[in-house]
Length: 452
Image (cartoon, rainbow, N blue to C red; front, side, top):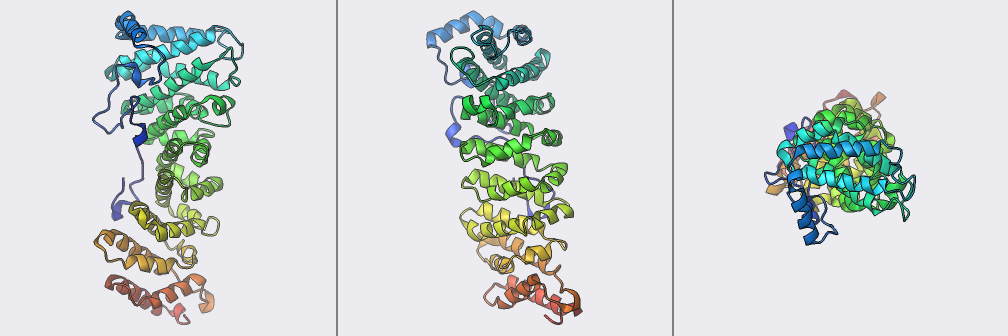
């Protein structure tokens, strides 16, 4: 997803779904960009923990084969589900022990199996004709609103059905034609995030990590459509839930990584950038995530900052001035220690260069050691460091060209650091020496700098 130097401000970081190596199993759903993606014709796509024996599965296949291939049957089942959800008996846990709970759970599972067996060719038509998305939203809302499960009564059938719902919606979200319908289905993204949210009583006790991952994965895919990003960001609590998941030490790396991918995808929208850089709580969490122990979370947090750093001048100023330059200090740490991961290192350098402008130069320069760091990085002669050296020198030039003395020749800290660090560099390469000489000559020619 990386762009060249000239395009970094125009090309935001947006990621389609990834498949973690440990998750390549029978329930695998391929990346939308992959030519291998397909919908399976067996139950493993929807449930790899089936309790049915092979004989029972064969019996079900024989009895339902004709109906499975008939989209009218799917529509009929959806109509049954709609009617059941609208009945007073469909309490989904509020009234204990009624048979309606399990009938609904089983019907939801049956619908999802049949949907995927119909094949992706008619997927969008079948979803639209049956009103399936609205039904799944209603079902998820009912389950999430139910009290914590007790036995007997509202039991494990709902958990199994919710797992299948999340996985099925993730599969649907891999199809590009489904992004807009899913993003604009009233309540669908919120329902998916609700079943991941630990603040919800049902989710905190009953939702599996696999269900959480599939749910947030689906929303992340939906956010890949540019038209969906501003709509998703406006949904109350959606970004806050994603940040909470990404920051939660109790969640798996896969769930946290997917939550961070959702945030990164949303941050590529122009309107969302403005709102995000104005949100102090969001920025505090984002800066912490830049130093997260999970490489996936850290990389995607950097991708989010990279998107935000291409905002207009007001956005750059807000990012740089937040908590007296806290972001610049973290970026400097990543640049200084990030050579073990070249992608992190170069991304941090590009973010720093993006943030450089006349309105931010003094705040960035007041971070002691930043000029020495840029000079050092700009002096790397190894062929593999050509790009990073060039980016570092450009950042140095942009900062130096914007720093001036104060009234009556007073020297601000940033200018003192600049002239000190530039004057000390005697062992840097010719390109960086040329840059340093240019900086000194530029400042010496300015009347207000005569005292420096």
